[in-house]
Image (cartoon, rainbow, N blue to C red; front, side):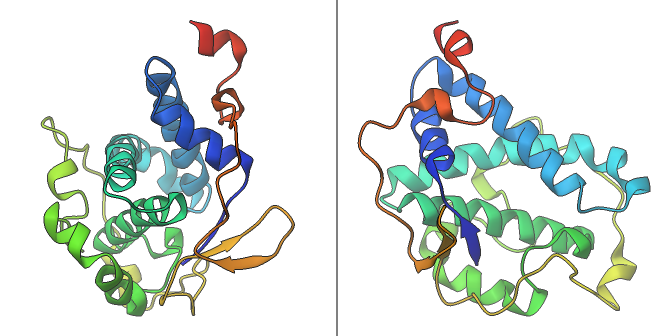
Amino acid sequence: MKIRQNIRHWAAKKALTTPVIGDVANDKLVDLHTSIFLNKADEDRREERREHLDDFFDATMDTYVAALEAGFAEAEAREITHVQANFDFFTYGWTEMMEIPADELEAHYRRYEAFFTDHDITIDDPLGTFRPAAGVTDAPATPERLETPAYENALAGFADDVYVETESGETVVGGTEEPADVDPTVAPGIDEDEASA
């Protein structure tokens, strides 16, 4: 999969793994991801998917931290959560929101199979053990989209590794080195006032 990586991603990692501001960062990142993916959906479908995506992305923040703790690089940990999201979108037939075409789902699964197996994550159950006890709000599926999928927001051809587009626009395999002294307040939605709250 091809993803971006810049100082805000490193700051988000730092924030999510730091006590106190971690909860603020979590909420802001959930809002951000929900907004990004809803904007890929048809306008008349957005509101009916919002609560589902909020619940889903909240759970993937736990996946991200667990992947970091398991030794995955930042880009890999983040890609794992994006793969989970694509499993979910595929299951619901939300092909317009997918970042990869369906025929690459299995290749992405295989790359992280050990982690996914440890946490009972499958294409049909993309949260596995990260599923909240209260569950995830359901939303209407669009299975008809799977019959003639367009995958208009999917980028094919990056299933063999994690490809990272840097701030300079260069594409590298595996990601960049974590900068020294990352400031967690640079994370999306975090500022000095929120960090000290």
